[in-house]
Image (cartoon, rainbow, N blue to C red):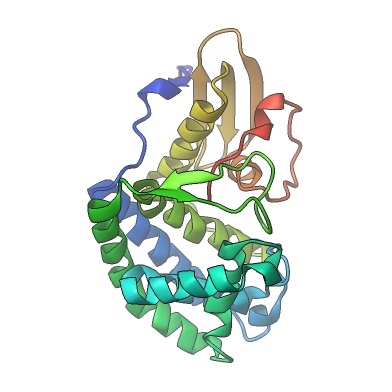
Length: 263
């Protein structure tokens, strides 16, 4: 039986609540599972995140989780980023991320893993609390530094806490897998749901009809409107494309790819 494409208008977005918390926790758990497999040599391997080795990516995740778990820590990180944005091409976010890494000094990999495992539940709880209390608050992003063309420049605290920060952990897991040459484990219930949310987000941003087939364990078929362009690629290549990352597989040419989503 041929599966009919899913109408993107029927995809419920990930919003603050139990589902968002479940996906956030699952993304941290998958990351921790992958980190447990790293060798001593792996920690120094370069990643596609400019200037960051594997250890730097993990240190960023630990520092970010500390900020998500504690509002005072987050405020200190944010203020530091604003004060040092000029040194990072005008991007307060890039400055804050580097501050998170620098703040952890030369702590070894096993210490970083232990710290992330301790922080992850508190980070998820802190994000849920922030989304509940401050979800209405608008947030602007500097169009500088690692900001890329087509990426949104505004979001809300609710969107940031419920899905964007989960996507950050999720995408960095794929970054690390590529850096060490190990295929990531895919859970369709988690990764497939996150892919579907990216599809719905992307579709809303460009508003054009399409028929999209995403292959792989996290994939699916999606449709918006009628008479749209037929597009097909690997599901993980699609999310990498949406995150402004390099894509290895063949990507069909389309003006729709100029619309990106936040990670």
